[in-house]
Image 1 (tube, rainbow, N blue to C red):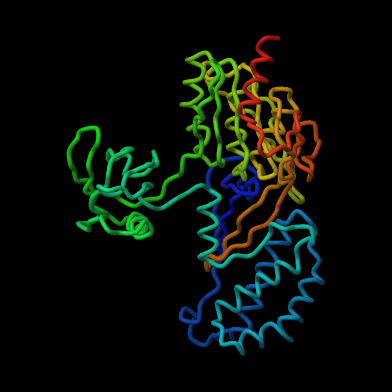
Image 2: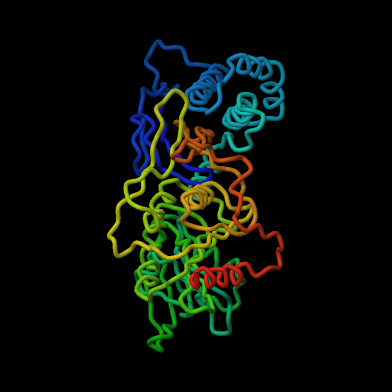
Length: 428
């Protein structure tokens, strides 16, 4: 069996190499002897029936959960599932004419439900395609040309180009206008048709005819659809001198890199107040939260702790960065009930350390590490594997991070309120 391990908070990734308990970026691979397929079996070996292969797979799923799940797993529940599979599930799915893969994957999803804690709403089984899509979503990965836009009279006006996409490297910029895609005029096409043409398969090349606004001429460029990390950090205008706002829509492994450019700009302009807007941010890898903490907390101090079943605690510390990037001014962090996982971890740590004030409503209460365990067929079981703790041992509450300033009014201009709050702090 082969398993790839990714550990993250709710939506995230590549944090902990479970096999060696090392905090690191990147996936850890574990390879063991693969069960022979019927085609690969040697002469004289008896091929397993579908039923026997199902049971073997269920044992594999059970073993993965039993080893890594943050709650104890009861073998009796596994036996209860097998009894249910024998008497009901197997015959029913067979009778419906379902494929062997469907029977295996759908039944494995039932198995996870049988084994997980009743209060656990996160752990689940995913077949290969949904597993791949989930991984790309939570890691902030995309495979396309990185182009967004809108239909205008002349063609398709570019409203955004992802900085790490090939189209950006080739020079496409806002508000250039795409005239043709592979010799096909965009005039007369619907928005969805154009978006489909701009989302080819990985490594596929596309030729764009573009009106370059800056050069005032038509050019042609060949761009490649490739995997890249989306930018999720953006500067939001604040009409108050010296006050800046960074909106972080989600965390991924490039969040700290994106933050560096913005923080350099803020420090260069002697910003005295910073608003970090995490409203609606579902989270990401703990490493991303840890890395951006380096702009605001002293280096080398403990950032957070995580505890896995039957394993030593894993400690995240604050990374060391050049002093010129360290921000010492006042900070307000905006949160709401959709702020989860790494966004809660970051805001909760800065609040407890007295480094930032929190405004908004209680966060989601999801400071939980979740891990993706892949099997040989590329299906995956997603498991809660640990809960987050402050350096002093206090566990993050399921009630979420409680703001210093509770603001429930949805119509309130929280950004403006935070800016004036920072002005008052500056006067003190």
